[in-house]
Image 1: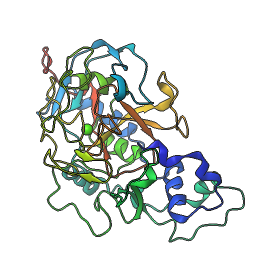
Image 2: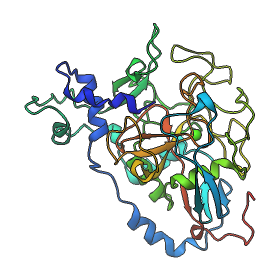
Image 3: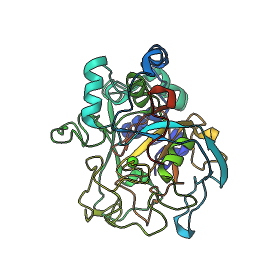
Length: 358
Ligand SMILES: [Ca+2]
């Protein structure tokens, strides 16, 4: 659902308009300003073993599992990985997606400015545009992010430009555009955060992003070979925050939400993790290139894997809420339906011998 925005032909069209230049820009920006939190994490590690496991973090046992595959017929997506065996060491992972309240605490403490809050660097964007393209104005390079906008007419589901709109002033504090704010959304997942922003947050929390294998193993919740976090039964509005109605024109909100939902609004999986299906896509640590499958539509191997689907997923278009489903975006991309949760090595906390969630 994201890769189509970044169709390479856009780079060479003679009719580039500013909005699409901006879209290209956010897919190609270097990681300028991104904090490398590893030093912070290394410093913290020495004292970590004495920290008890917080109630909002789940311990996941080590395991070998059948990763990928499992799609049924029409639910198969182009990026699905072929079924293969994967092994993860014991680790811990947040029970919930990181919320606006969580992220606000991080920003207060660190003064972090997200990718979407910074101007697009022309020197980087220039490399992706036809030679001789005149420098864009500061106004065209102004900070912004991608907002979902329901079209008022039928649009082809093969072209995400029909519902994504580059919006100046959209960022995590202005999730539906510059006139919006996060009042009342403290327990909703933070959105409009790039992969770099997610890494910076997790490092601050003395954690890290989950690997793709850890994410899928955790999402399966102890079940083997199932399609969804809850098993093989079909998705219903009670299961997860996804799209009901006709995508992308009308979300009926039958599940109670047309956008993000407060984290934990839907039943947790077998490991006590909520929203591993739906609500918002979640960044993982892994590059697209680390997967087994070629990814159609990928702009570069630098893209990172996102998992779990979002409130925008509808069976007619995107079954990203399957445990094996995967999508990808460049590490500077930010979107209205993408957030993250953090994980950590088991050694991060002083755990009892018996892990929870098993
Ligand atoms: Ca999610």
